[in-house]
Structure formats: C-alpha cells, structure tokens
Image (cartoon, rainbow, N blue to C red; front, side, top):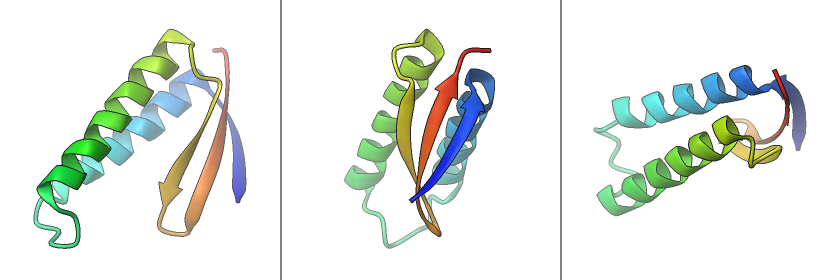
Length: 74
C-alpha cells in the first residue's frame, strides 16, 4: 500500500476530486445507485472530519490500489 504525507488542504482537495469523479461517472453500470450513494456519504463524512481535524489518516481507494494518506496541519 502506498503512503502519502500531505497537508490538510491537499487532503481536502484529494477527497473533493474523488467525490467529483464519482459524481461525474453517473453512467457507470458497475456501481449501483445505492452503492454510489453510500460511497458519496462516506466521502462527505471524511471531508468533514479532515476539515475539522478529527482525522489524521485515512485510506483512499485508487485505480492502482489503496493509498494511505497521512494529514499534517496546514
């Protein structure tokens, strides 16, 4: 598993880009509506937690496998 050390603002940007990609990919037949809604909900909760400083690390799925993100204060 790849590990990335990043600032809070970069972590927030990463989460937002994954969320936007999931919203844009609405025609993906591989992901059901319920599963997509659950993923969006998890991303939004993660976004709130990172912004509030409650989460210092998280795992983000990517096309090449999972990436563990460690967040440092801005």
